[in-house]
Length: 478
Ligand code: BG6
Image 1: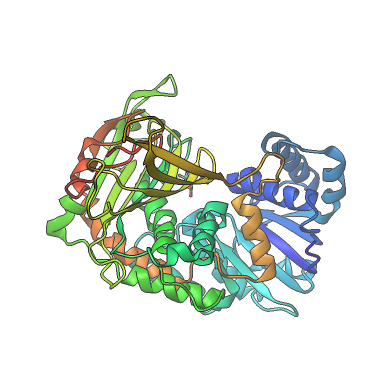
Image 2: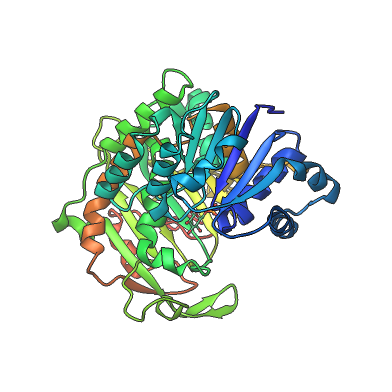
């Protein structure tokens, strides 16, 4: 159990992130005996009493924590306080007497407030204290390369890089962490993880969800900023990075930044071959009719925001030269399906039929597992082959499941930066995205019906002989 004598301050404590993700994570960590918080202070502009805040949190825990237990909550409650105020240094400064030693300031705020809040905390002197002081910043970090650098420039005078924890909650997911573990503990993978043996990599994050009331943010962001620049590029970097010398945050960041730097920039004249934007129209998802994006609440009928983004990336280094990495993510797709799928090249001489190639799949949704898709002799008298799938489910029945936020909160408390992108990774990711953002700023995305596999145009990204996998994990090329 972590007993670190520290205060956790949640800025934006009356918002969605706190009620849906942070407090459930805090509660579960406490209930599982992983963290015994000394003091948590909710801070927000709402003029609430402490009692009102606690009631609000309790109501939401009952919704978002399956095995909520009143007695556990009653024990945790005394550690939680509330203070109302705005994001000025004067108002934040009033927190100072309540914070003795170490503290974490978690900015659960809209992105445009990250800079002002970090600066005001610094001006109030809360960035230094008798213990350590850390700041947690949600995504997106910036809106493009320039704004990411501008945001850094606002924060840097007050907070050093070791004090900053940029959240990309995908890095707290078990499967993301398992990509590195699986790659680097199994010798069998070491020798095949390269262009000689790997034909292509597909990273898919398909969601049946739409914008779910987040239209103010989403319509400005779109799929590139919401999913690609951060989550999918991070997953990509885990698959493609060089092995670090030791398990150390600095080594991990160095190698991730290096591989991101090796990604070939998409030139304006090549945009069609490397990037596809889509937007959903009305359709049926899980048997329910849903409106098109332009008819969603709050969205303009002329919006050209992409709700789907598909990319092909090449990594210009010795390991990956010529291997396409396909990345795609979309809202209102046919299935909730997320995976990192690595396809081997076919054997040089195939005696048993064309097109047989193996896949190693890290599945994230609907369940977490590793699948090794191979070919074997079909039982019987003939010499036919059939696909065999060796599945290693990631969770066993009865095992406790931790959410990404639980993992990441503990990492912040322990001061472990491994699962938090360093600024140069963020910078390189924007460098990859910027030309695409520019190209898409004034262009119409391709329509795809809600409940489909995405826009037809995604197929044009594929190299000859390759095809996207089905959104139920099937091999579309078999
Ligand atoms: C968030 C995006 O970062 O990740 C959402 O803003 C997306 O649009 C979500 O739905 C997906 O993550 P998860 O963990 O809920 O599958």
